[in-house]
Length: 142
Image (cartoon, rainbow, N blue to C red; front, side, top):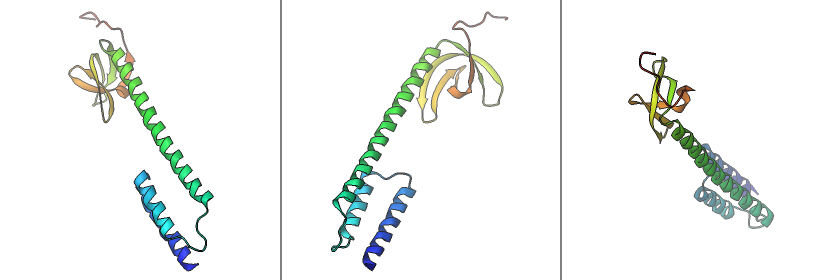
């Protein structure tokens, strides 16, 4: 029985270390599963029910991760669509110095920080926009 406790502790430590990295991928899960199977008590092996439950939980985890990726892609497409609708429009935004600015959106792009609008020769994060004005610039001198 002592070897089972040691194996369980070792497995628990391995799981803790793997999860400490933020996620448990398929390769890490299979490695942990093989370790668990190698270290189980041959007199009292893990039941099929427990084994299948672990596989089902991992399958659910993978499906959740896939769903999360799909939602992220849809969110990005919604941002791009919204950003594209701003092209040619005047917007008001807060610049890097905290001052209110007005300018026309020339183009839209996405990078690792999110959606960026090209305005007055610079990039403006979508979160800095606080007003969308008409699509035609105001007359000179107004």
